[in-house]
Length: 172
Length: 208
Image 1 (cartoon, rainbow over the protein chains, first blue to last red):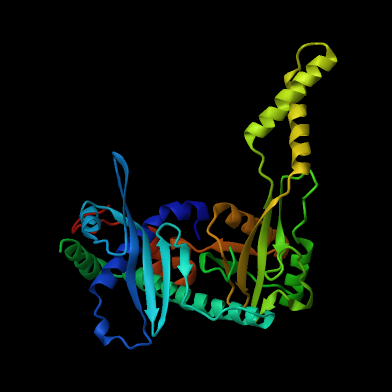
Image 2: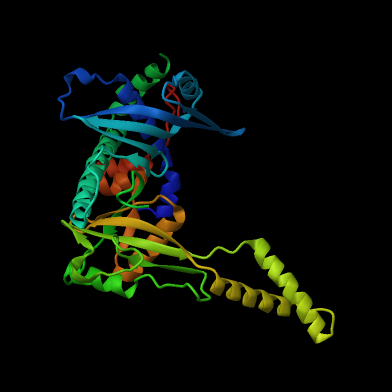
């Protein structure tokens, strides 16, 4: 394995590509065939894009519950990558909201489906176990998605299928 | 940041290795040896150590209180005293003038000023209480993974150092490269491809 400090910088582009791939996947996925147990990812209320060029770093932030992503598509077409995305994941009547950062894959502002109030010490342990379970659920989903992305990124289908699809989606 | 907060941040780690003897005993010993030390009324500026997730101001790891279900659950606590530079400057200035009057020389050498500043910082540190920061963590020993409920660089760095010191096991933070190599079940040929991989532009026919 490479030196971790070197690898962090050398491969942070994978995180940017992952979030762009994920946005495309969310935007174009047909959810009608999903069973209720599958759960659905959706873009949340904030997205940050970065464009590195010779002139320096350009950052584009779009936020707001009703914000359109037109400017984000323009930035994508100019070569920007998604550096941070707020996302939601819904499964049955449960909903998680969180922000995923491209370069570190760190999860921030993670809010969980509502749970019962804690009143006694026994409640506290039950609440902790429940919270761990809810963490497990969302982290497993994110890690599975990243695995699907990496496998696709390292396959021949990336150049022949995925990248052209994303390129056409950006030009929509 | 606590596991039960309404909103949390999570840094994910892979734990390298296992204990040779009982995991519960080894974790208990590591926690006790590196339990948080109180620094109020002392000259130390900072203290970092383990504490209990339920009683972070009265650490107690007896009775497997650091276990929940199949997980280890405890917290990293970092106590820090923050002195404003302007406060230090004020106290130094007053003390320098006082010493000048006392020694009759009308000046202090740079070495004397340096020692004086160290004394002043220590005295001020003794007078102010430390601010505690608590970061819960979940350790799934069997699956060799750990989640720290913070994405702060300082908390992550402190965790990595203290974990190694306490348990003699190292942590590898999961970011795009490590997530791909350690947790994506890549074949040998996929690993070889990963080594050659470079960024692409999503514009057709171009590389970034």
